Length: 357
Image (cartoon, rainbow, N blue to C red; front, side, top):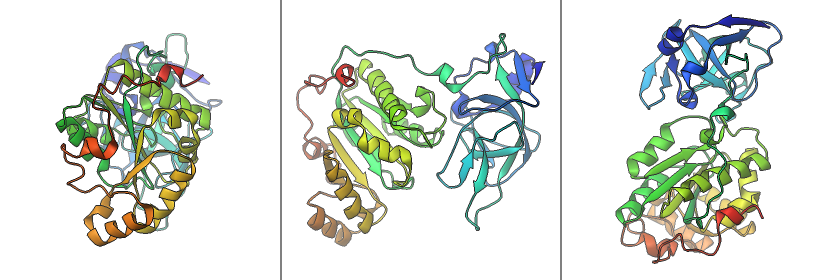
């Protein structure tokens, strides 16, 4: 392993990706590189762009997408992914790929034959502090809290894929228009600010995602880590005294993390209502059965299926669940649909601080 000093000006001139946005640049003094370095999920690095492929932009810390050019130096972190391509953290600091515009690096193992070319990066070195200790995303995670407040009424939006429509921001907007202060959190996915910014734009007052809990992505994480993410984000939203919390779990149901969410006792204890957003009628019926089998509070069907009144009627007939259309998501109806208590939602008998008991 080699250790090199790195200047602050060089780091400040590099493009800082969304997932690494909370990195205190001034704490970085050295780069670790050469043989013998095995990167881990969340390790942050300085890298150089060597080829431009499908991902031509990097989401910067505050949301602006920055067009990438050859030889650009970027600050990103390592993470696994399976959303569109199967990608793993390499076993050394070899040339690899930018797999998410939020700033995630991995080595693509397989992809569809029709997939576009990849953006290639060359790691310059892992970022380290004055003690030559590699800086990891978990070092920047939110602190562990114990909430003294009962958690607010919580609605989860669960999709059967990552492309499950815009139900979450629409729901947040309706709840905001109904007079609630809404907090939101994205529980699963690969590091990107897109969904959190959509939630903010819709009116959410406080928005978090799994990167705030120290995870660049949720690919390949286990049940205990899923529970940790849910507990951490819900606790911080509860302490912020939100009236209602909206959770988003939009991930392919073949992924391990989605199964972990469905089986999570913490998730089951926290969530008061679930909106399932399938990609088609068949997955609507099958997914509803899976959720009901887990004894989770499935309340409604959402997503793009509302565009067809005939399909919506058929799904309601089979599942017995309403399909959320514009009328049901109006500020006048949304409280009734989800049976949100008229009193302050935080005055509930179950509390997040007891969720691990």
